[in-house]
Length: 630
View 1 (tube, rainbow, N blue to C red):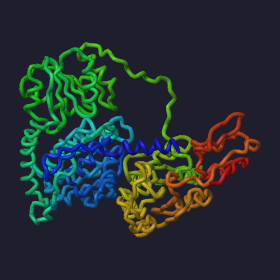
View 2 (cartoon, helix red, strand yellow):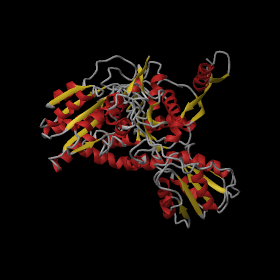
View 3 (tube, helix red, strand yellow):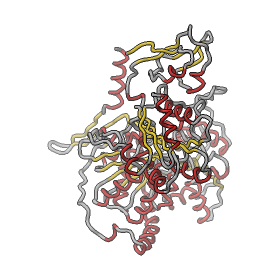
View 4 (cartoon, rainbow, N blue to C red):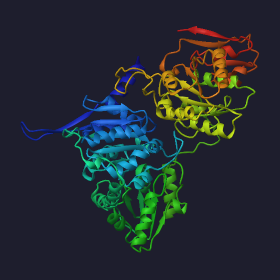
C-alpha cells in the first residue's frame, strides 16, 4: 500500500499543474501561467497545443515518440492525431491539412526523416499556408538508432529554418515560435530536439491556448501543383528568402551574446547547458554566443560575436554546422581569429556529449583548470548487451527457422525492431540490417547474386505496413525466390507498443477494422503463405521448410503477441534431480530467464519467466516443467 501511495503522489507531482494568475480588473480577462513538470517531448506537445495545432501525424521512433502521444492524451477533442504508416505518409498528411490553412505538426526521429525526404524537398518549393512544424528528434550517441545523422543538414539542404532547443522550457517556447515563423514565411519549419532534451524533465511555464486558429479551407491555386517552370521560379525565391529568414533571427530571443573578453564560446542544443555549467568554474572572461537557430545563422549577430576575438571554441553535438558557418563569417569579414571545434579535433565528431567532455575541451581551450568534483567513471564493468525479452515470441520464430535451415546454405536478412536482436548469440539469425523494410529487398539482391542460397527475410508487423509491402510487390513482380518471415506480435513493440493498421485501433483508441497481413500477401500474389504460432515448434519448423521449398515468393506469418501485452499464466522450473546440466536450453535459445545455477544445475528465474514453454520442448532430459499456474 505505501508503494501505491508513493506512485500516486509521483504521478500527481509530474502531471498536475501549479496555476498563478493575475486578475487585472473586474470583468477583464485573466492571464494564467501554468507551471508543469514536463519531459521535453511533453513540453513540445504542449507548445503545439497552445499554438493551436489542429492536425498531428507521425511515426513512432525513440526519442520522439512521446510528443504525439502527449498531444493525443491532452487532446480536448479539437485536434486530429494519427500514427501514420510511415514518415513519408505522415508528412504528406500534415502538408495537405496545412494547404487548407490548418496548423499542423509531424513527428519522427532522425532516421525517419530519410523516409520523409522526398515530399519534404518538394514541399520547400511548394510552401504551406497553415503553420507546419516538422519535429525531428536527433539521437547523438546513438542510444537507439542505426545512424547518428544531424537534421540541421536536412534544414540547410532543403532551405528550411531550424530551431535547436537546449532545454525542455526552450523546446516549449520554440514550438510556438516555429508555428508563427512558418506562417510568416509560408514554409515548413524544423524543430530539432536531441535525446537529452526530449527525455529531460523541467518545470515549464505554459501560457495556455491564446486564441483559436480557424482554417479557411483549401483554395484552388496553380501554386499547389509543382511543375518544372514553377520550380525554377520557386528556387530563386527560396534562396532569396534565406537571407530574409536569417535577418528575422537577428532579433530572436533564442540567440544571444553575453559576456566580454577576447576569447569566445559558441554553443547550441543540450551542449549549451554543459557549457553554461562549466563556465561557472572558470575565471577567464569569456564571450558566450548561444545559438538557438543554427540555420540560417543570423549574420550580423555572428559577425558581432566574432568581432575582436582572438579565438573561439564551438560546442555542438554531431556535425560542425555552426562551426562551418562561423568559419565562413570570419573569412568574409577578414577576421584574424582561430576557430576551434570538431575540425581541429578539439571536440569529438561522434557520440553524445557530457559535462566532462565539454569541461575537458574548455580546459584545453582556456588553459585553466575547472576545479569541481567529477563523476567517477566506472571501469572494468562487464558489458550488458541488449537481448530479446524472456518469453519473446521472436526467439521462438528465429529458433524454428534456424532448425528448419540446419545444414542448408541460407542468409537471414533482418530489419529494424526488437527482432534486430536476433543477431546476438546463441541465435545469430540476423546477417544484415540496413533500414526499415530493407531486409525484404536486400534478400532479393542477394538471391540475384547467389541463386543457390536460400534467402529468408524477417520483418515485423509494424514494419510490414511501414515499408515492407513495396518490397514484397517488387519480389512478386520480378519472380524472385525469397521467403518472407513476418514476425507478427500484434504491436509496435520497440517504441512502446503503439498501434498499427494490423491491430484494429487508431491512435485515439477508435475501433476500426484490422488490415490482415495474410490477405495483403494473398492479394499481392505471394504464392505460398502459412500462419503459425512459433511456440508450436515442430509445426513452425515444418512451415518454414515448406515455404523455402516453394519456388517464387513465399511467406510464413509467425503469430504470437508480445509478452509485454499480457501477464504470464504460468511459469516454469527445472527439476534439479532430472537436470543433466547439458545446458542445451541455455546454449540454443539464450533466454535471459535461464542461467547456470549452483550445484551444476540450470536455474529459471521465476520473476523473468513468462511461461512460453520454449525451453520445455528443448530439454532432452524432460527436466523442465510448469512450476505454477496463475
